[in-house]
Length: 348
Ligand code: KG4
Ligand code: ZN
Image 1: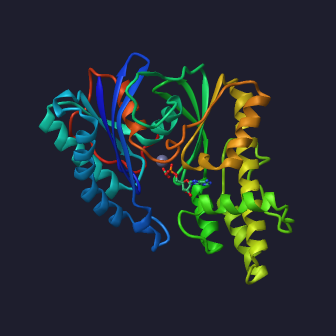
Image 2 (image 1 turned 90 degrees about the vertical axis):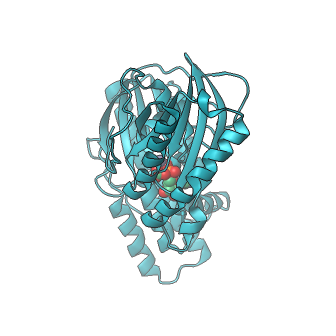
């Protein structure tokens, strides 16, 4: 079966052609067009600009993927498109494009949950096109997924693929959002996550002493709720006290902020692992590109002797491969061909 995946929930226009049979997959084409350069001057994603860019890019990327993959349109069996969560004007562009295409090709169009996409992304071992079929990673259940992105911070229990229970989430900022906001305070370019990460790594390498102590919000609470807004405010107060920080002080704050976030994420995940006896740990979403956080999760999984599934290079951020894979799992008998709407707050 060949699934065309479309993802436009935020500032990446992404399209993918995926062939699947049983637990095997073959990537026929996978394109992610990032709009970061267009949004950078505004210090964050501007929804209406994202919408315009998606409208412009989608037909171009579709034509390109068809041409480069050698797949003829008549070979496409279904279209899977992100319905939410995300920015509604951006989501609508993908949905309308998918619905038009569904009509033209006379194939079902299946609405997908972006967060489920981040979960299943970790079952793939690579993001590049290849001619051979590959085997999907097998999931021992129940599994726990920790989803850390620009819009979400969630711990999810997976009883089986397609059946999810959110055990805890953030009451305010998402972890990636906190990275981006603190980066802005430190006058680093958007998106700030990778910038903070680079500075924090440098601070560790050069043993820059850390004179500022930031809180670890909710670390001792007995639930799986996160809150990162206070951490961001604490960083702001620390900066105000300093006035104009030196390069070393900026590096020190970046390191302390990354340590604080990491400790909270690991502590909550450990609590969830103990409460739910998970057999596999999945971590997904843009923030897992962070090396320090990756290593901390690797250590945690080793401690509990459970397999850790992380997205392969190119699959931690938003992409359409994860959406196509979700679409290939969806029940073929009741695809919703048209009539569904964008849902900015769609939950798992
Ligand atoms: O999953 P994603 O691509 O988009 C959303 O669905 O939100 O995640 C984007 C987020 C941004 O906040 C970005 O700053 C963060 O992931 N991010 C990182 C790193 N790379 C991306 N945060 C920390 N360290 C990184 N290396
Ligand atoms: Zn995402």
